[in-house]
Length: 106
Image (cartoon, rainbow, N blue to C red; front, side):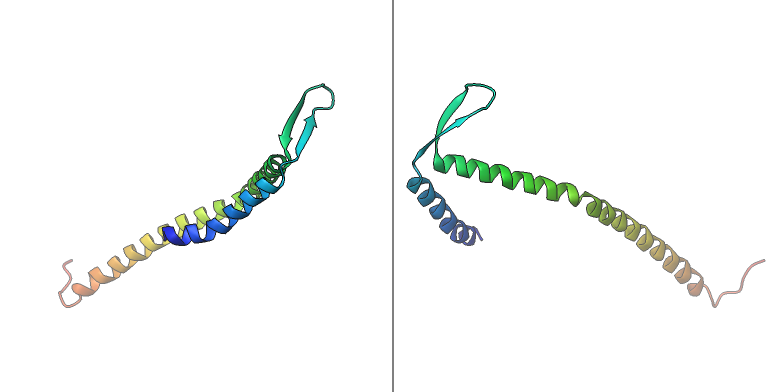
């Protein structure tokens, strides 16, 4: 399984390295209200922006799925409760049938 993971990841890593090596132009990034500036390679700026966008999208998806996960958890709890009730009812049905041939004491 480890080899399959590397087989899939290796082309993406190769593309990432080629992208970084081919975009070495320096970009000057500044904060508008201040005079603070920093110079970074274009590849780093683009990759950091893509990583931030990916994480923001992942966070939005995680938040939107919270309701479904909560409903699934409740459904699993209800299923466990119902299975326990079924087992209890089956045990109650099995107990009187084993003593069906015996006379009842009053």
